[in-house]
Length: 432
Image (cartoon, rainbow, N blue to C red):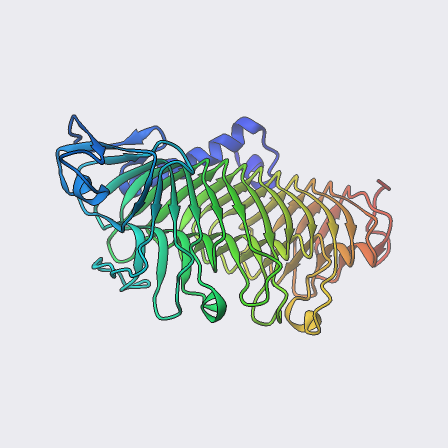
C-alpha cells in the first residue's frame, strides 16, 4: 500500500484484506499464529469426550496424546484449564449442541499475569499454550458476582483460533450485573508474554461489561464475520463491544454489533460498539453497527488507526476521534445515518458528541475522507476548537439539525465536501 492510499484511505476491498493481513503478520511475529493454522508440534491422536478414557473435557486436555478433542452433543458442566505447549483443538458438535457450562462455584486461575490476576473462567488458555475452540457454546451460567474477575474465555499470553463459537450468559444478575469485572472473551498479554488469536464467526451475547477485549502491548487479534449483541437498554452498566486497549493491535472486519444502550448517567460511560484506546495499529473495516450509544471511539492512540467502510445507523453518536497522535487517524468511506441526541441530563458535559455523525477533538492532521452522513440530530461533521490541520475532503453530509459541517478549528483543510449548511458558512463546495 503506497503512502497516498494509507493517508487518504482510498483503498479497494483487496487492500482492505491487506490491512487485515498486516495484523496477521504481526500476530505471527508475536506468537506464531497464522490465520490458516498454528505452528508447533502436534500429536496424531483424536480423543472423544465422553468415552471410557476421558469422561471430562479436562481429562482429555490434560492427556498430551490428544491433539484433537471431539465433544459429544451434550452439556458439559466444568471449567477447562489448558496448559500445554502442544497444539490442541477442542471441537464441538455445533453451537447450541455442545455446551460447555460454568459450574455454580468456580476456581481461580493460577496464571501469572499483572492484568486482572486471580480471575475465574470457563475456559482458561494459560501462558505459552496453543488452543483452538471450534463449534460449541460456552455458557457463563449468568452467575457472575462482583467479588471475582470473571472471563468466559481468556487467552493469557497464549495463541489460538476461536471459530464458530457462541459465548453466552457471562454476566451476573441483580446488584452483580453492575460490575465492570466481567468479560465474555479476552486476549491479553503483559510482561514478556505474547498473545495472538484469530476469531471468526463467533457470537457474543448476554454479556456484562465487555464482549471482546484485546489488552496489552504484545496482544494481537483479528475478529471477522462475528456477531455481538448487547443487553440494552440497561441501567446498571454500560457495555463495550470490541475493545483494543493499551498497546494491543488487530483488525475487526465485517462484524455486526447492536443493542449497546445504557440508560444511566453518561458521566459513568456510554455503550460503545468498537474502540481503540492507547492501542497499537488497529483496523476497523466493513462492520455494521446499529442501535448503540456510540458507534466507534478512537482515543489517545499514538499508532495508526483506520476506520474504513463501516456502517453506523440508529444510534446516539457515530464516530468520536479525540486526543490521538498527529496524522494517525484515517476515517474513510463510512456511512452514518439516523443519529439521535441523547436525552440524558448530563449529555452536554459527558456525552457532548451525541447527535454528531463524526466528531473530532484535540487532534492534528487526521484525515476524514469520502464519508456519507445523513440525519444527524446535531452536526454531520464537527471539528472542535482544539483541532488543526485536519484533512477533510469529499464527504457528503445532509439533513443535520444544526450544521452538516461545523469547523471551529484552526487551519483545517476542507475541500470538495458536499453539504447544505455549515458554520462558518462557505464550507460546502456543493449540495448532496
